[in-house]
Image (cartoon, rainbow over all chains, first blue to last red; front, side, top):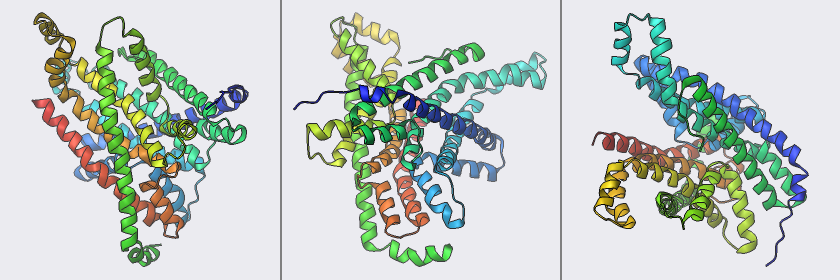
Length: 224
Length: 226
């Protein structure tokens, strides 16, 4: 059985694919920061909140972390028109991924908050630090160090997870790959090139995050 | 809207639909279990290869590292497409379920090998030096010293990853494998309300993964204290 790989047809479309990669990063960024807002609220509710708030936050986390994002977005996209809300595919995907990352980030941030030990705060009080100083020099650096690695892993997961937007017709990296492969019929070459682009994209993202972590929080983060 | 749900419910939860959803759930479970079983064995193998020091195995180690890093950094959807287009011409007539299962295996091998590797590396160095002093061979050291001590670091995250693979298999619906997500799409296409169709599917996924994630949390707590 003979098959000759022809990558030329794919490389011609490289700028088009890279445009899709930009949209992929955009989706990941938007849902990451949206999720971070939800995550902070959720973590505060779970650690410090009243019983009702704790219950609601836990139910939210348990539901979203135990069901696939794809089906959640299906529900948003196909069921909301029943109550008169028609979402653009891109908006539906971003909303779905934001709600998802909110749940995961709640858990990550909560783990960071509870890792701060009482004795550390007591030691800071004994050194006559003000409440603001304790927050700035003791609590926040400690939280940043604990959550940095899971946070950057999660961002990589989100970049990969945003590929499901292609199933709703959003033209991000995977979506554009599907477009190209139906046109040039060089499916396997196209998807191999796209796989390499994803790998490079997430490698660059991890490396950048590791550098930022080292510079800002003195975290000894590994790239690989 | 609620009237419609109440009206459709008896028909939706009829015998044939429940059997259909049950079969779909079986396929989701099959992909996850076979994928993770194969992934665990291959992942263990890869993790052990990465622990070796001999120079002859150097190219194998490099190859394995490239494999793991590559497959952890591409989306499952892209893996599915690559496997589909690679297997179809090589072995014509492979079932879509088979293709999806192979994809899950490839992905879970990469992820679980990392989990296992961090477990193997958690064993204190003194243990390895002690084994070397006792003149243990590499295989003896692995099977009698390192592996027995690393299970408690490996198992909790491995269980958490299985939950992730249950959810990832929902993408196999795009190939046309009739698993839970595809079943939900078919039910909705047949005219049931999307809230009912996808809601029931979400509930099914929840029933599969919630016990497992509780089990993972339990393992973590239990093994941490011992």
